[in-house]
Length: 199
Image 1: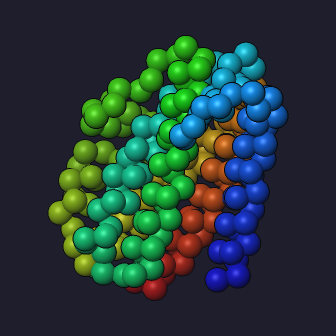
Image 2: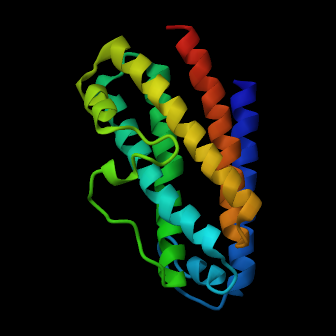
């Protein structure tokens, strides 16, 4: 529990750093409300091709994670698995909105919404249609094992993508989000491996 708390604090600190970068660049002279508000414009002139690739790739990657996480409420046997899935959803949904705002501010193409993820099957950690179908059909302890196994692989892919952004990206807010992804999802990988060990 202590490790989870420390990890969560570290991830929140990284996200706060990203927010601080955005707010500093915005100068506080916009009155937009809602998610993303004026934040995306802060990155309009400071990004490179890697930042764009990171956002365009991580959005569908996160969307599939949300799809997987939302299955847990009605299918998981373990309260710990349901709790983990809820935390994944709570963390990644706002990140999708933030990255969508960046792409709009940069004048770059958004990933296709409402499509299946088959076009992204070659992306690191993405589940195949067969994997997703099997997960949707699973219930109870079978669901828990499949979910933890698949999500561990999915998270490893996200950490790999974020590490590339940290190494090659230029935009400060995007690199800060990459830091947060590495911290949070590496900790969740450890948690999922522990839960798999108790199955």
